[in-house]
Structures are given as C-alpha cells and as structure tokens.
Image (cartoon, rainbow, N blue to C red; front, top):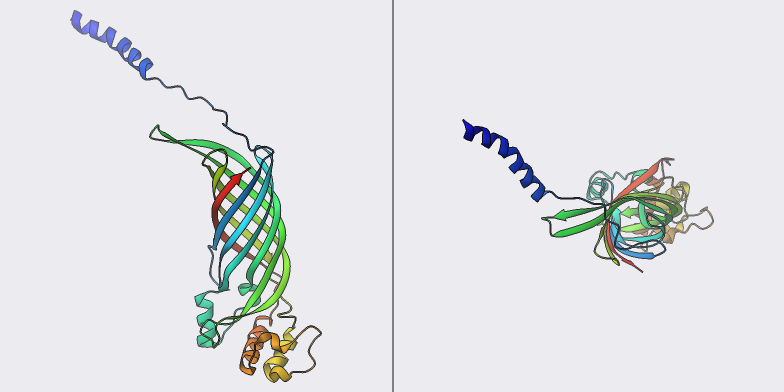
Length: 273
C-alpha cells in the first residue's frame, strides 16, 4: 500500500520533469534581409487556364520597386507567342461553318500593365526541422493597354491560320500569388493573374462589318470601302481575301459591350538588386 502511494505521488513530478526537458520555445524571427528601397526583375512564362474559345501562352517581364517592405510599384509587359482559337472553336468553323462572336474569341496578343503589389503575409515553413522555406503571399492590381486580334481562318485552312488586327484597348489586371525566397536576391514566383479587357470590336484590319461584307462578295475589286480599309489585308489570293473577310463579317455581326476575363497561370524567377 505504501509503495502504491509513493508511485502515485512521484509520477506527476517525474512527468513534469520530462516535459521541461523536451519543452520548445517558438519565437518570431526578424527577416534576415529587407526588400525596402530595392528593385526586382522577374522573368516568367504564362499559360491561359480557362481556354474555352481561345488558347494563350507566352512570356513576360516585370520590373518592380519596393517602396516598403510589403508594398511595391510594378510595371510588366507580356507577349503571347501562342494566341489562337481553341480546337473546339476551329472544329465548329470547319464542320458547320460557325464562327464565334468577337466577344468570345478576341485574342490577346500582347499587353503592358502598371500598378501596385501588396504582400500582407510573410512566413516560414520548416521541413523535418532541417530546411526552412521562407515565403510570402501577395496581391497586385494594375491598369494598362492590350493589343488584340481575331483569328480569321483555322489551322487546317490552305496556308494555315490567319489573323486580323483589332487594335489596342484598355486593360485591367488583378493577380494573387506566392513568392518563395531562395536567399536575399533570388525569388521564385507563382501567380494567377486575371487580365480584363473590352470585348467590343468594330473594325478588323481597319474595316467595318459593311466593308467586310463588301469584300466577301467582291474580293480585291470591292469598292466603296472606308478610309484605311484594304481588301489585300485579308490575304494574298482571291479565295483567302473572301474567306478572311467573310469570317470577319460574321465575328463583327453582333458587337458586344461585355468584357473578357483572360485568366493565366504564370511562374518565374526574380532577382532583387
């Protein structure tokens, strides 16, 4: 009985002693370097993640200046080397001669944005108590200009795809992403960015819908065209001119005041200097 009482009295003390031996203290560590008043150059690749009517993929460069530790001003330029209608859209054009409206199929060829970036969350992740990964979550927003075009012929047409210029239009961008710090100079960026631009198109290659219909019927000999509209801008041969103008006429047939959300995933590496 005495032995049992001794065990009951000494066991809590032994457990408390053991807990004190393995106790760990977690502290908030200051960042080992500061980004304030430093510039950052980012090179990235991007690809559209909502390719229903269109497909986009390209490259870009972004220059940012960190006004504060978690606030930066940025300017970016992107170019989509791949910008064309999706296979579904081309299949509809080839099999049932149906072209999407410009509001659905307007292609983003290139763009330029300027804005601000805020990184409100910074933290560390420890892997097996050995490797510490430093990362930050950020959001950015900007305004700029987009260079757009429309596809006039599918990939299986004679001579391949052809495009018509639809000019420049205002654009807004909104992004959310993560920065993974590989030191005080190099950073890996992963971001999802939504580029929003107007879907309203009134001219293709400088030609209105009335011009396109006239060229579709008369080819290179079409008359009464608007200033700045040339039938030769739709192709070299008569068949190419009439086919391209016909596609433009269909896509311009119902102008829309809606906007297009071109959502792309982009990843790249940054250098702080």
